[in-house]
Image 1 (cartoon, rainbow, N blue to C red):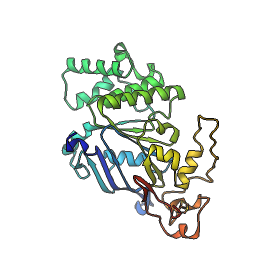
Image 2: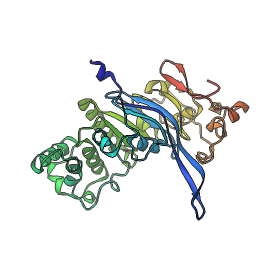
Image 3: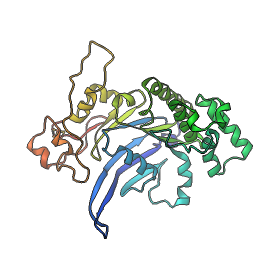
Image 4: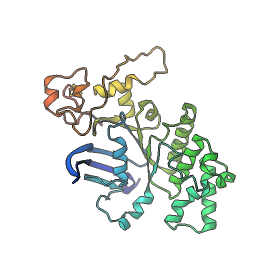
Length: 325
Ligand code: SF4
């Protein structure tokens, strides 16, 4: 393998996204929502990173900031070794083609007035990469590849089932031959049996095309089968980051333990102690000081309320942010 092919597809360092909170007639800034507060991770060629946490932990914002669908407040995002934060709209264009997104709700993300064929062909049209005839052939091939019939190209989104609509979203994401796809809860709105089919499709496409995925989900069970690495987020920060096996067999952070306890275990001989997390995720406008998790952590000690635990490596490739580990 050449050194270039060893280069990560995506390197994110100390990424922050703080939204100003404005009040009053003059819309003065009175605070910030610390949605993403210093997040770092890397995704290699053909790899999947599962980004997991409860609703409101900042994972969706992190995904969008990586793609620059929203501008990061600070930090670095490198795609194939090139820093893309700060690139102008036109310099960003080739990277837009390389990075695509699949949304949670395939219905609201598909324009109801366009046919499925027009939706899948739109990126090709916008980037001017194919003439009409070629475009139709490419769209037809994409339909077949994601398990739809090319004859369905003239149908409208409401004529498809939820699973089929997500396949349209996947075909659209594939149109420009991307290297990285961000899946923002891509199967959460689907029935469990359909979820498995869509995940299998994503895995087949990954093998075929050496795709890299940033797979965002609130559900650890969903990311288990598709992820090589998992990063667990809580209130804008990564609290645990390791390969999938380590997360599922040797989780160290109390928050990861709590998320894992909700994951069903197929082997009846193995039982996980159920840990119900008390309360909701605190507001990211005023996150608790010290360890953000201390208000819900069953092991919290005085130190946790004042001192932020750094994310440190406790075993090769396994990082945890907890004073007790
Ligand atoms: Fe719990 Fe303290 Fe560890 Fe935070 S640092 S997870 S509060 S034990």
